[in-house]
Image 1 (cartoon, rainbow, N blue to C red):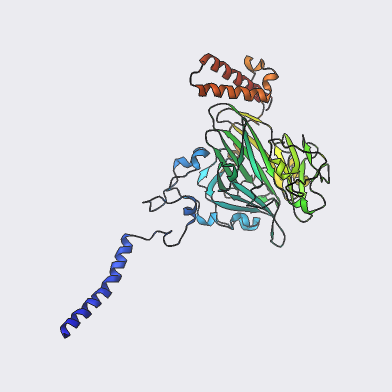
Image 2: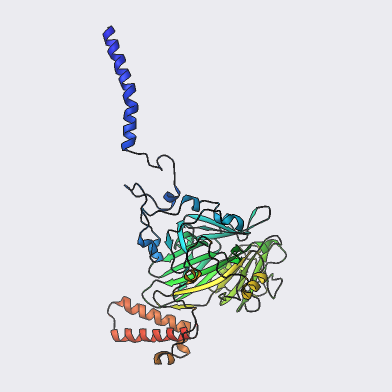
Length: 467
């Protein structure tokens, strides 16, 4: 009896000594994954870890490819260090602190803006008193003015993360709303000089919105302005027409005695459409505490074809909004709810060709900034201090529809193009007919070639005219 108890005690003691050793061996053979342990890295939030991958691989050459390919990165692609993707970043410091901020390490290069970038789920960038936020999954962006007490005031309607403010793209006759509600694939990016949102419509177009913060001189960021570049790329196999539009859901003027103001009109409280911004130059909305201004004429700005001030609901109902001049901003669905719509001129793009449009957003009226831009005292494009690229390289952009008119003599076919052939409706009908021939299967090669030659001649004539 005594011997049996001794054996039992020995077995108990052996188990107590063996179990910890077995546990150590088990975890050394089967390590606990970070996500199983309740740990989520910044990389996991962007690129899911594929099975069997123990460490991120170095970026491949594919990271330098066209945007459509960089949308989905290889499972082993490493993103920028977590310190550069969490907030606050270097952008949340003033110019004296920026030199000591962590260096930004881009993981890919955008060929259109010329900037290095890393894909992020969400990001903020602050320069002076202006803060911009982007959300990749929603395809939307927000803007804030930072008051002297540090409080952030939204300067656009912030409902559902600013989703009522959006860019749109018209390809041929089809219109696309560029955010999650429009079903267009999007991604947010942190760049060397700000933020970007990239939209891809497979086989048709790539649309990039680039928010870059200009410098006031000597490397100092401007206190209250961001440069907005829009790049449209034809991803199709045929020439096509592309038209961009933006709708901004303004809120500041709705709580003050004036909804809007321009350079020429200090008070606008009714609907209005501008066919040109040459005299008015900018649109401003303010509640006397904070403000937002859209700079739409002067310097290197791409003037819109028309600008509309109207009820926010009506600005998206049709491509060119119907405006009731002199009427207020109330509708049966909303009271005093105003907004700004900008329709840019149509670009005629060959396959792979890029169109670029540019304007500025500021937390003030645009007089001071426009004067500074036109006098040359403010740099039009700020390069981050830690960037190793030259400014010449950074500003390089593929051939665009806004390039200087060709100085090459026109071909006989282009010289023979008539005014009727330059009509937008005629051009779109011609493109549609060419595409219908391709889809038909049995193509009359002679007719198909003739139509394409006519279209090429029209595009050549348009480029020579600076369109």
